[in-house]
Image: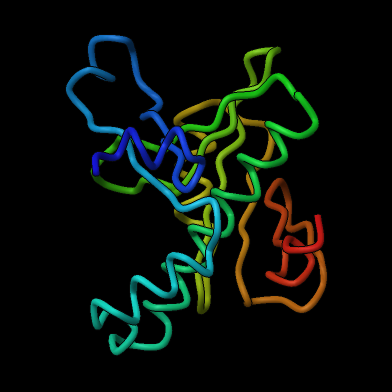
Length: 157
């Protein structure tokens, strides 16, 4: 069974790199599961769940964020694009491109996330603000132009 069967069955979806058309052809798409539970099952069967707790939950959280953004786009018919940052160094997990041309960088992770990575992406893409989804805070915090969202709050959106 090919990945196209899984795409058509809506088990997985793809995210393109944020780049020019010529660079998009050189960078592969990234694939995420629409159900994070499916990702967790595959990780457990392949032994990836035995890696460090932060890495394992970070992997699941990134898939959850991608799936949530994808579902938000599909269900609400919002006009925005979901991309991944194709830069090798200092890249963030996701870039949202609005219909007005604004780019919103999103960093997802477990553990202490600081503003350095998100600020780098904000400068690169000339963004007004950036979003960090992590377990660093228990409430929504706006620190300058960076919004820190707790995992539970993001999951309820």
